[in-house]
Length: 382
Image 1 (cartoon, rainbow, N blue to C red):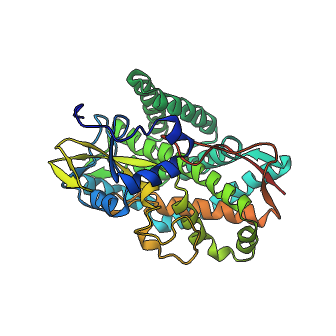
Image 2 (image 1 turned 90 degrees about the vertical axis):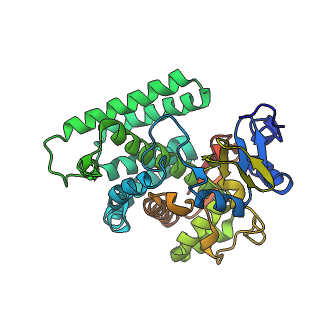
């Protein structure tokens, strides 16, 4: 970053973190491409975000010295990995997994009902997301507690900004993947998705350990983090909208559209990174080659230029403009799985309850960057 470039805002200031959505809305209307030390060049408008994510020649996904397979690559390397990996997350695979997901969702809801009041993230959403992802990957129950503990350390390391700490937790995950791989060395290729992954070939060769760890880290950290944030957002919205809560109980076929619309208004993922490969002008700002760029999904999905009355919940919105799962060639490969998990869990929540409410005496607390959703949210289920 050029230290001589004036700073437009501080996305880590207490004022911004107190209400990220309101702060991003304000910046989008007053400074749609905003410069800061923490997030470099933040792109906040829907049209500009689309331009960035669809122009991979100008805005590269190679933003880290660490491997990020597959979405940390540009074409043609990115395409080769996606062609090999995407079949493991195809809709028909997700459909086959749905009954197992439903069992886990029903169990999670029954556990919550047995105590009547839960902390939405730590006691409900996060354990559910870890159990489901472990089951999808074919990992044993014994790894679930270990994965939960590792996720906590990873979250702490990310927030610390200490490279030694982040390297250490990354090595822990690679060691876990090595154990999983050793346990499957003699297993048939179709035993489970993790075993299939170990037989995937890209450009004629098997993935090495670091590539496997990168893929599985994306499928666990990324999936678990956004699913758990999404569950908290959805439960809060249901608790705050009693009429819609009742309507969705009686018309569960509306849930897919309702879930996407709620998560458009209150997104579970703040931003992703890109890097300018050449000098470029966007949103009236001249960015130098090498500039680090943050595409703000939360802001883009609340842009009134793309969504009329963006803070209003409208079940009949055209879903094409919703950037919940990204856009372009790097669109989230796990979108079919995530949509199924959220739909099934909300179906079970609504079918097994008669009333969802915020717990009295416990004010919700919003999460702060890099997280979205809620850091603290107590929910009553009856």
